[in-house]
Length: 257
Image (cartoon, rainbow, N blue to C red; front, side, top):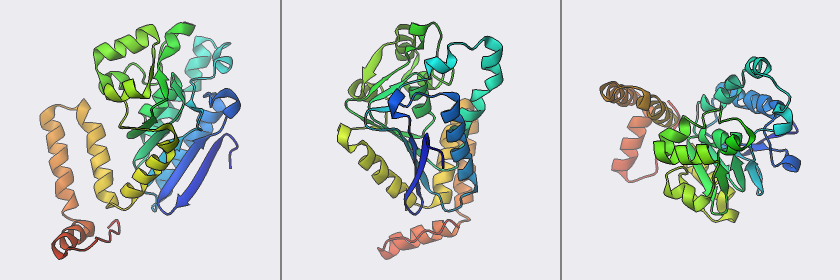
């Protein structure tokens, strides 16, 4: 087990991936990105996994890229790292990922959170894309995912000024899914993970797939993807179980089949 990325399995179907570099506010150097990618890639071979919670600690989700790690790199060395492949391991996770954000989520930290499907943030969280202040710009989705999440004008404001916002402002602009008290971030994230873990996994997977694929397609194509996904679910045992349980006024027992 890696010492800088911890994997916990608190209950069946749920995994917690915890960044563990507290001495540098979980700054994202190459080593922690590689270890995180390795953990997330392993999830593709776990048929019992239903939901992942990605977090740091109470002081920091991830304070950004490790400046010391990057300061001596030239363009070729930066290119040869191919860090986009490491980030993609998180985005390609086959089950929903919930980012539990406490403290700082800046630069690469915010970009990492935006690779998740749901973001639960504390009121005291500090989020932003301050890369411009050190002479660079967001390079792991901060100009693209952020724009898709909050719109052009707010994304421009955050990226061009390096402004850091709190959880309240992030929630008001649609950057986070739920806002909770700082001491409730992990409990709420794991509660949501537990709720998702009890739902029919094929339906959950199809919902995630269609929501992620749809925005980059024409509306007619995205609606066709949605229809095909619904039709597929009518072939599952979980569809029959869910509807039978509803009619029988009992709790469904989903099996992922």
